Length: 104
Image 1 (cartoon, rainbow, N blue to C red):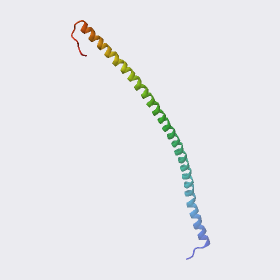
Image 2 (image 1 turned 90 degrees about the vertical axis):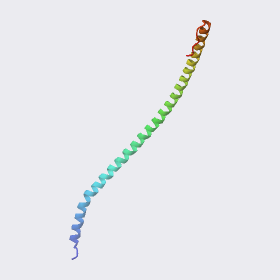
Image 3 (image 1 turned 90 degrees about the horizontal axis):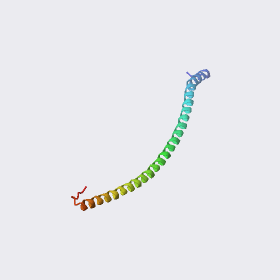
Image 4 (image 1 turned 120 degrees about the vertical axis):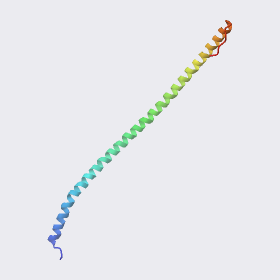
């Protein structure tokens, strides 16, 4: 049995009816993919900005750490010298007063 022109037209109509919703879904998915691409680009930019800020903060922290280390070194050197000076003076006083010299 051969298909007639009407049969082929009917088949085409059925196929078109099935394809229209599928095409709409494809168009909708394409739009969603485009939106997602835009969001990914936006997120990439934000991550890049955050990365730059982290690098900047790391540099600031490093500079401040170096500054604080210098200040603490100065402070400890001062306190060390003061301690040695006081210890020497106490020893001299103990010796002068004929007291037992203590190590502390």
